[in-house]
Structure formats: C-alpha cells, structure tokens
Length: 89
Image 1 (cartoon, rainbow, N blue to C red):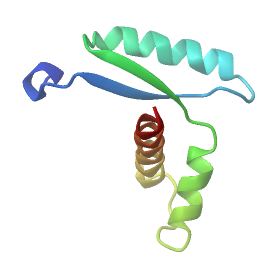
Image 2 (image 1 turned 30 degrees about the vertical axis):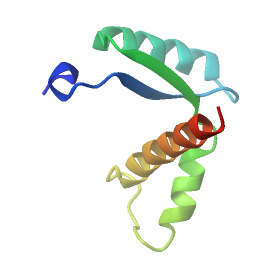
Image 3 (image 1 turned 45 degrees about the horizontal axis):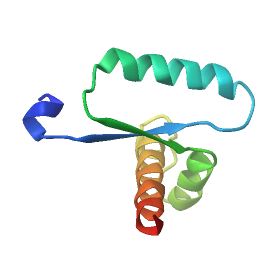
Image 4 (image 1 turned 90 degrees about the vertical axis):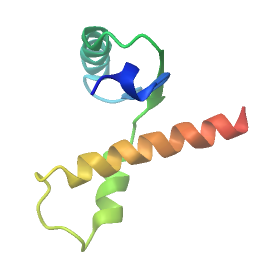
C-alpha cells in the first residue's frame, strides 16, 4: 500500500542529534527519506536514547535483540515523543 492510499499526511522520522557518527547517520536518513518520495510533511524527532529505553522496557521479555522487537519499540518511543511534543505546542 502506498501512503496516498492510507491518506498519510505526515511522516515522523527518528534522527540522531548527538553522538558518534550522528552527522553521517543524519545524512543517510535524509537521503533515505528523499528516496521514499513522500509528498506530505516530514517531521524529524531526536531519537537519542530510544534504543536504550526500548531495551529497558523489554528487559525480561525477550532474549534476542535481533528479532526486530527492540527496533520496533524504539520507533514507537520516537512516535510517543513526537505526540508529547505536539501536545505542548
């Protein structure tokens, strides 16, 4: 399915603001978003600490870090941050 079929108007993307190689990662993320060809609004949210927070939330729930659950939860955390920021503005 395409974003147009779902009527998606906004894309929330995690972006590293600090840390090692954050500039290189940001460059890659901007490039990837450009390749998607999304026509709506793109909002970049600081993703710092989202993976660590996801691992803490998953402690005792899963033993494998490579099954994508931590990345999925980190993405949800980034979206939660966006929603919270939106409420404040």
